[in-house]
Length: 112
Image (cartoon, rainbow, N blue to C red; front, side, top):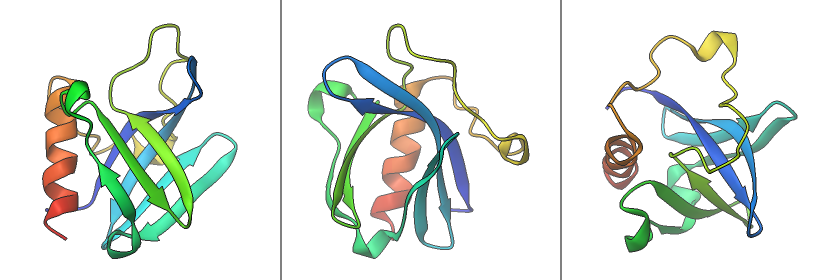
C-alpha cells in the first residue's frame, strides 16, 4: 500500500483527547500534533500493537519508542476538530467512516 495519512485523536486519560495526524511513509509510522511530533518509529520497532475488539477497528493501541499511545480514528465526544496540516490535505483517506479507516490502517500495518 502507498503512503497513508489520516487525522486521529490521541486518547488521554479517561476523558481527554488531542487531535493529530497519523502518517505511514516508507515503513515508518509517525504521529504529529499541533505541538509537534509525538513519535516516529519503524513499523517493525512498534510493540504492543493492539486493535481492541470493543473499538470495532476505530482505535489502535501501540507502544512506540517505549511510550504507550492510544489513538482513535473516530472523533471522541467533545473533542477538538481534527488537526490537519495544510500539506497533508491531499490523499487523506476518504473511506466513509472510522471503522473503514481503521481496517485500512490495520491491513497496512500488518502487511509490513
